[in-house]
Image (tube, rainbow, N blue to C red):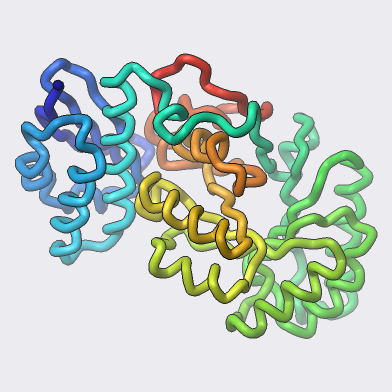
Length: 323
């Protein structure tokens, strides 16, 4: 059995970091994360902790790293763990000669939808498009009309596409209630993070109002771990929870969140076009689509599916052994 030999970390020109874990046979796994905070960690300590461990001991090795990282007074702990998790999983997949998809239980679908920005949709067909909110609530009726007009134009441009209305905390409660009535004929299927001031009770109320119009409420938190996510999920404050796998603790953490969310009737949408998001979506029925977004992996490696102009529907990875 191969054993872990070394761990290396290095920045790249895009402002991200690459974590590389190599075994004694020369096989390596890669993880990526935004920002240079990764360099603040004692990677030598992590390396000495994992050196000599069996590559197949993925779960126990990751648990050891988590325990060590929790003692570090450095920000972005979840991001670092995500990078280590991705690299360990990538190394395990490569060393076994199996597609990462098989290690997650196999594919439950042949393809997964990708949601694209409206500007991108003008050039490339997509099943889902993202239309940004414009005009603040204080624009009153004019702001409301502007938003509805933009949504109507998007529907005319893309009659067969579903629309994600990305508000990103741009609305107040009064504006939201008035807007919902106008969304009926716009083709909006999802509304993302609408309220500037949120409480669980208010979110549940808005979700009920939206669901009556056939619209699903999406919340976003790139740094959720299971402990943080379960409050939102168990409170049924949303229909969909958006997660960034490179920032929430990696595949191991997002799989726990997905299991808990499925029990409570909440769907999970990975944010980012990295390979870990792709294989997770293909192996999980509780994921309706992926949001196209510059991921840490895309910034680091520049060749992840879904970036660099690749906006087609992503299909299974066949016999590939990469993550």
